[in-house]
Length: 550
Image (cartoon, rainbow, N blue to C red; front, top):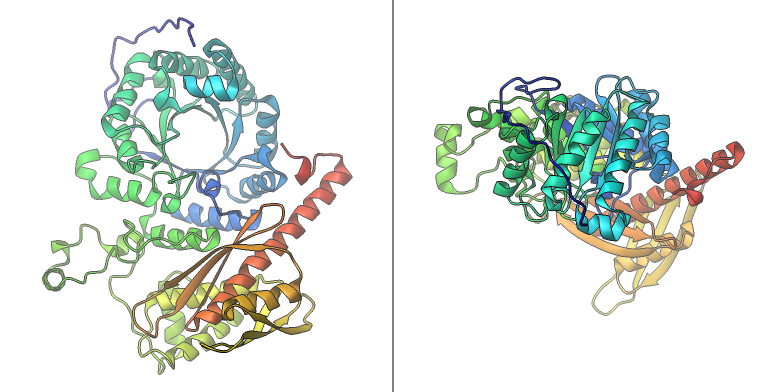
């Protein structure tokens, strides 16, 4: 790229915390959640429109300011999800992503029309390497395209965000000119994307400072940042950006996303809250909803949260060292910089056992954030009693696993009714399985396999009759000890290369494996039915169906 780009420098640097014209500075950071868009791009996950709505409703309770609900032109399913969220939620801004093409922008607006506060978010490559190899455009061509498409989005809504993709590897002179042009064209938010997680903290801080000082009309827009975690610096880069004047952070729950993921919402928010003395900035997030939000996203995406994950990991507020325990008994602040209750985790656990009644069980679930129907409560309580006969004490994580298993079973097309296996060192491995079909019919069969799990999966496949390949199988213990609940996570791949995740839990790992497989198969079946319905609707309306989508 060899064009000369003239930059008009702004002589007066913008000071963080100081009010300026237009959008200006404030003492509040906008939390832009992209779990439903960038988070869903994480390899191995796929969310249905209803699952996206469930996550969006929890994000609404969490208090995020902007929910990026998807990329409407990418598929009919994503369009439906954005439309569903836009029509349902009234408080937050609902955002749809679009690349710099008229059809994409038009499609985004079509999905967002029902939103109380719609935003169109458009993006265009800004680095020379992406302009040359992806867009095959010159800088000047890209500049004109960005200006035209921003104006097009502005004709639909006043709230327009523009992202120069791969901004941290772009020529800074061109980046300044690109930002100035899109702000003049109507962008109210400009998002600086470290798309490949390349930047270090000092570099990213210098980039933000340079933008504040050298883009003449930057005061008319909110400066946002979108950092990826390829080098483990997404949160640190985001925090440095807001220290230097950015006022929106794009992040995801549990940090999920493309490749190594995004800046983790819970880490960003709690860093701003815990170190208010440093940042002097606030958010609108209800931090007591963080733990529940993490669980909801983990459950629906199938991505486990590692035990040592900051804020929401299983060990985040657990103390094993004798010295640490002694300090905690005397004064919790000796080893805890955050009150676990501030993120929705109770400081102490109510110990439940086999003598506990249904009322205590219900109360503990309520404290953990679960509100079950009477039927679901009855089923979960029965499972709790069965577990209590095997374990002396039931932990909160055991309860969460029991309830999650019940919630998974509520939407099943096929239900696992009975599993019986025979295995051993010198015996044939066999499994007999009984399922309840979609119409309540009893379906049973048996099969041999190389092991008990293989035999179970073979017989389930024989009954259900949907071709697929098991591509991932993971077993984790929910708690410590020989009597721990085991959780199995699997991923299966269909003949058209779609991936579906399944989870199941039980004190019997073979049963947990069967439940996980049924969960994945039911997701596959529901997804296929949804696509067929969308294709049928598209055919009747004359619009492109799922297979024809761009």
